[in-house]
Image (tube, rainbow, N blue to C red; front, side, top):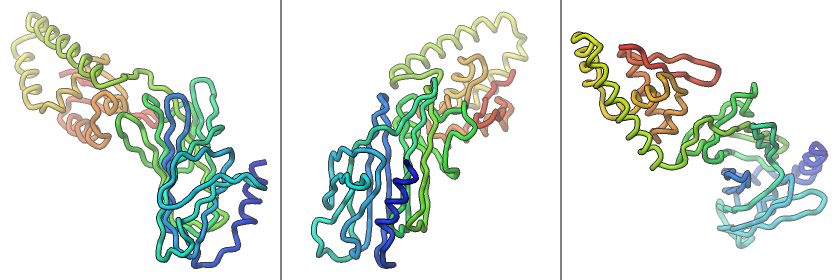
Length: 295
């Protein structure tokens, strides 16, 4: 049925001239905690195209359109149809629309699958796809290929994982099959106040632990610990304290979530701590396990 849908789409939309081009096509796909999906689509195209037709697998509820007009059409195929505000506009035209669409998520136990095939109906210079996962969700490790197609990269914004794909020079008839398997984190923290509370508890526990250690460790060992801790900056101390509070080992992605540091910043801190012999890093599939070494 899906194959028939795409064949019909391309038969209708393929006869285009070379000048009829889409310069940029961007999909920002936001999945909320209830698995409801909102699409923000941004299109920049040449004046030769008087309308843009995007085949869709299910009914579209249009919320807002800027820079033109968009409507949902349900004829031989289901389509999102967008037009500039005037057919007499010249130059390149930019348009954006926000809409909702259902039926794109399936559940497999604790793992959810988001799937959306993007058919390319016009010669397109650049395509960008961003999938924003629900708060507290991570790309699943329970499946062999949790992300498709390959070549995506990740970022974090407001404690939400965003998977991003970028493509160039796509031709009519191409299909971009987006697949993301995701699941709930094992240790979700809901807001920044909980992080602060956890850090306060960790600091109290560490202080008590150091006080007790004074009575059992030799003077030389105490001096070594004080020397190591004295050269850590505030960000490094936060990372070390979080690892210690999790029994001396933690998933590196959890450090990003608990601290709200960027992924790159956490990687840089871990690299520095490793070079100084404070932590060890073990690669397990797609995960990095960070271990606090005995000082």
